[in-house]
Amino acid sequence: MKAINVGLLGIGTVGGGTYTVLKRNAEEISRRAGRPIRITMVADKNLELARSVTGGEVALTDDAFAVVSNPEIDIVVELIGGYGIARELVMKAIENGKHVVTANKALLAVHGNEIFSAAQKKGVMVAFEAAVAGGIPIIKALREGLTANRIEWLAGIINGTTNFILSEMRDKGLPFAEVLKEAQALGYAEADPTFDIEGVDAAHKATIMSAIAFGIPMQFDKAYVEGISKLDAVDIAYAEQLGYRIKLLGIARKRDSGVELRVHPTLIPAKRLIANVEGAMNAVLVQADAVGATLYYGKGAGAEPTASAVIADLVDVTRLHTADPEHRVPHLAFQPDQVQALPVLPIEEVITSYYLRMRVADKPGVLADITRILADSDISIEALIQKEAAEGESHTDIIMLTHQTVERDANAAIGRIEALPVVQGQVTKLRMESL
Ligand code: HSE
Image 1 (tube, rainbow, N blue to C red):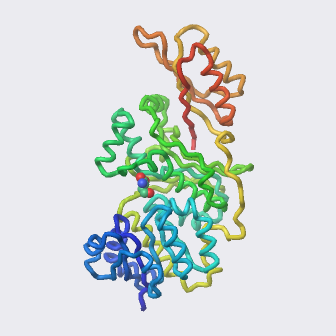
Image 2 (cartoon, rainbow, N blue to C red; image 1 turned 120 degrees about the vertical axis):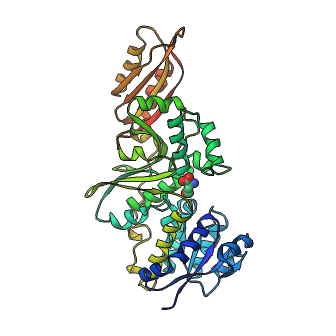
């Protein structure tokens, strides 16, 4: 049977993995897809690299637009990344009637509404399994496997770099900056790791998952994003003493008034399976009304794990490209005219529990003053530890876990606690989820 022709934009780590796996498993993949899937053209600025990966078996160019305009190409695989040239190329490919497979979470989280609308009009598919959690088929699960359910919330460890850093900080009791250097030396963190450590990468992925889970537009600009660069190793240690681990979670939760969409370091009970996802691994926990909780675990990055997701999309597109566009699985799980403009709630309206650490004078009445403020704000304390003051020290740490409250009320109470003369400096606040 005639092969379907694929044009690859970018043959770096993931592109190279895609080329290798597609070649190695060609027979198996073709048996599944119903016809061979062949990369016939590759665009990369580094032609030498492209030649070394492909062994000169396919047409090479350093002009990606030559691929998206080539009438022989059926599917364009965009692995360039970012929202500059990648956006132009994806839009051009759609305009030219080509199906698109992309791993570009930043592009979809920021410009997805425009891209999916253009694809819908043109009757082409834009597939993006590799954009979230690398090799874990979480898009397929949310869009198809859980289609009977009302999805209530999801929480994911969706950035391997930060999970590696947090695991090392906990294991070795090291500060963030030191572990970041180690992560960079090992190749886990980019030379400019900002998107990873400041939570932006996780927020892109959480935004995409929220859209598919709840049938809402991409609203990355409304997501609350807080990374791990300010996390103190002492809080990881205190959390451990209280039976919790700190993970950078991407959380999306549907509430009556809107959607919570947030990324931040989060205390989760150490006994939860997801709390034990260590190193650079990823996992997503989904709570849905019929099935209950399901957990998806695997490699969130790397050449072949990500290629696994890219090729799964290639097979899907190959199977469905002759189908009437109306009868394909909708890009964002819900029919396009059924997408609801539910607002993303501001962080002050989020309802969660809190870990609070404060440095206080070690004298009578201090704890009573603090608990009075919390009681006045209707914030209930779940657990509390007070460390014995160190030899010769007049101050000590108090650590509290609260029950659920609205973030605005928690912030107001924290402001009043910080104003107490017996409290030194600022209160450290971390959010906590029981999952
Ligand atoms: N930079 C991402 C991570 C991998 O650290 O998980 C690609 O999404």
